[in-house]
Image 1 (cartoon, rainbow, N blue to C red):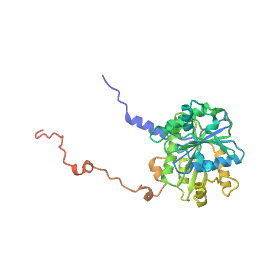
Image 2: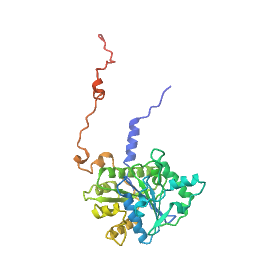
Image 3: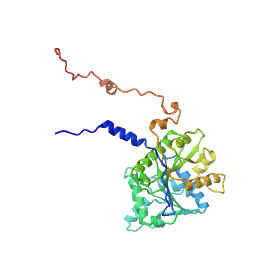
Image 4: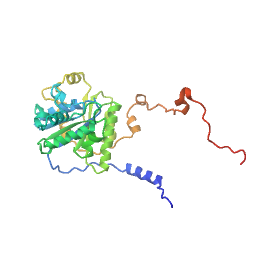
Length: 333
C-alpha cells in the first residue's frame, strides 16, 4: 500500500500566487433598500463613540434619519449623545422582561435626542458569558422588533475592533453592512487593530463577501502622519482628521456634542458626514506585521532590536544540568 504524499512546495507556491493576485474595487450595484448600514470599528478607547455621537448628530441636523446602535460591551456609545446618561441595554432589558414574562417593546430599548435614535446592545456580566454571543443575541432581538422594516437613511453600528471574531465580526462575515469605517490614530496599537479589520474584510471577500472599507477617520491627530501613511499603504482614503485639541478633549469628557452647526467644529463633522455617505466600499490591502511596523521609526516600535533565542539551560535556571546524550557511538565501524 502506498500513500500519496502531497507536494508541499507546490501548495506553498499556490498560496503565495493567490495572495499576490491583484486587488480590485468592490463592484457597486443599485441598492435594494435606501438605508446605508455602516459598521465603525476601532481600538477600545480610540474615540469611536466620540466620533459616532457627533457624526450622528450632524447627520440628523442635515435632515437624515439616523439610528445609532452601540455594539460594544462597554455600552458607552450613547452616553455622549445622552449627556452622560446610560440607557438600558437590549440584553439587560431582555433578561429582565423574560424573567417577568413580558415582551420587549421598542420604547424599552430605543431612545432619541436631536433627531437621532439610539440604543445599546450591551454585553454579559464580567466572567459570565461571551460578548460576541451577546452581540448575536442582541441582533436576533432587533430582528424580532422589526429591524428590517425600519425607515432610516443611515444605521451606524459601533463595534469594538480589538476582537474581530464571532458576534463582533457579524457585519463583515454576514454582509450585514454595506461598508466599514475605521477609527484610528497615529499610534501602533490603533493601527494594528485597523489592519486586523482590513484583514477580516479581505478574508471574507475571498469567501464571496461584499463588504468593503470606506475609509479611515484619524482621531486625536497630532500631525505625525503614521495614520495617513497606513491609509495610503492599505489603499483606503482618510475621511477626516480630527485634531488633538484641548477644547475637543474637554467637551468630550463633559459629554458635550460638538458635531453641530451651532459650534466651531460643525464644519469638520459636516464634511465627515458627507464623506461617510459618499465613500464607496473598497477592498483593502492589509499589511503584514513588518509592513505595519515600517510605518513607524524603528526606535519607537523595537524594529531595530535583534531577537536572542533562549536555551534550555536559561529556562531551567538553577535546576539546569547536563542532559545525557541519546547518541549511540560505535568504536568500530
